[in-house]
Image (cartoon, rainbow, N blue to C red):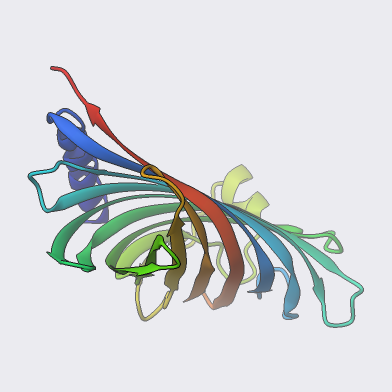
Length: 261
C-alpha cells in the first residue's frame, strides 16, 4: 500500500508539470542546532551534539487549481558525544519527500491539507565500537500533512508566518534484530525480520516547521524559522530516536513558468 501511494503521488506530480502555466516557488534554508541520539543497537548511552541541516523545497501550482505539488530535500549531519564526553557518534541522513496539498484560501489566511511520501536514508557511526560500529537507516513513510500561513503588512513590508506539521501514519523500515550483526544479514544472508512494517505506534515520529517570511521584492522573500524533526522507533527489541532542533535561515523565490506541450 505504501509503495502504491508513493506511485500515485509521483504520477500526480508528473501530470501537473505538463499542464499550462504554473507558479513555481523555490525555498532554500540552512539551519544549525542540537541533535539528541539514542540507538540501542550501538549503545545504551544517549548522545548529544550540534548538527547542520540543509533544506530545499519546490512547490508547483496552476493558477486555476486548488492543488499544489511539493518536493523537499533535507540533509542532516551531526557530531555527537555521550554524557561523559568520551565517545563520539557521527550521524547523517537524507530525506526526499513528494506530496500533494489541497488549498483553502481565505484572504490573508491560507490553509492546506494533504500528504507526503517520504524516503529517508541515513547512518549512525560509533567511533568506539569495534564490533558493529555502524547502524544503517532506511525507511519509507506515508505522512499526512497540514500547512497554514497568514499574511500581514508591517513596516511597509509584506510578512507571512507559516506552519507545517507532518505525522507519519504507516511505512516500512530496515532494522537488524537484537543481537544480529550486519555480517549475518549481508554476508550470510540470514534474514530475521529486517524489513519491518511501521505505524504511528511503533514509530511515533513528528516533523514541524515554523517560519517568518519578509518580502523584499515581488519575487524574493527572506526567511527565518525553526525546524523540529523527531524520529523514533521501537522495533526488533531495539529502540532509537534522533531529535533534530534547528534555527533556520534562508530565502524564497517565486515566479511563473509556461510549459509548452
